[in-house]
Image (cartoon, rainbow, N blue to C red; front, side, top):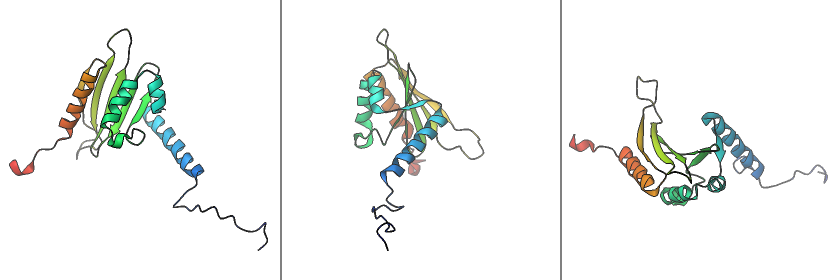
Length: 156
């Protein structure tokens, strides 16, 4: 085999793709998420620059290993953001609107990810809402824990 015909061994396989392939997958995922939710997908840094540093800090405190990049989606527009995260059964959407002139807004909606047998819609519930504050956020976290709890079958 001549030098020009020699195959270049980069150590990359289908199981271990190149960085370029991983970036392409991330871009595709970002496009799909933005299309699904109809809003721009934001980075943690962008969310902080919009004035939501406290919300990022609060979310980090409850995220698995504090890893926001792998546990939450930030979607947003000029005047508000939506933080989405998922459990096996539910999707939670925390809507936030920060304001320096009033108390702002923080609220949460829970939506079941699967329809019940015979239903064509996903059930949902309004959880805690109120002013943009740590107190409201803590109430949302308590509502989420309560929403996720299951009844013990042995005591029915």
